[in-house]
Length: 308
Image (cartoon, rainbow, N blue to C red):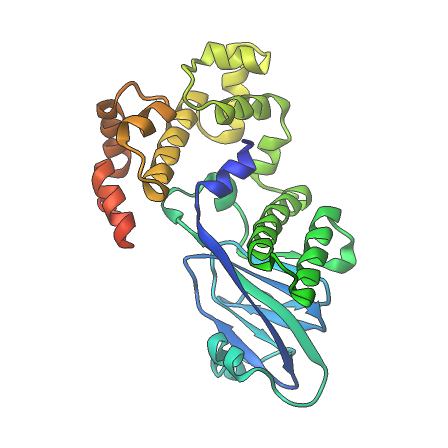
């Protein structure tokens, strides 16, 4: 797998959820902070997004997509809203149940969220801004536009297979949103990392086979550069040496396997490049402050990570 796919897969939990809603007239609704990522697609009409914390409001038009990758609280409204109106915003659950206002131009929205396990967020995703707005009028990524069109069409027609198609299209939407942000980002470490041929080659090799017996020399050979060049370029861009990144990524994979599967520790150790369950348990406990067994039990119970 590639870095973007791995970064998303390591934190995604369950299936995305979404609600399609049409609202007319005057309306103002609040989305509470969420331990995941939220998104909105404007299928028709216009509205305003007002982020919590005093950030500038964002005008959304037909075809616009916005991602809130860190689950920040925010308000959607039919237009500009003063602080008093924002304070009186109706929770989205109530607006969804009410259905619509009356009179005036309407807006049709697809509002949804992805569940994320933030205990091991990849730095690529951690670097995303609070709000990623991708306006339709700017042209943008044709893949993203196609994903939005397919999503709207599936919602309109509700043909056989929609129960499988919709979650898959929502997953596709998240990938295209992250890609589009990376293509447009003017600053940031990870767009630069994945634009560098040496760092990209090394990361691709590590992610393709994290269990391999990697050394700096073997990784430099895979990237077709000297060890000194690899260490200098990788460290400067990624922010940690190649072998330190590999250790972090192996433990991130181990945590995801513990969270999402019932695989025995010996299997997880083999998949993540550790010689024995004991070796994995020792490294895991040092990194997470808890044993793999307790980590798995906490995740199954839905509680916070022990040792954190």
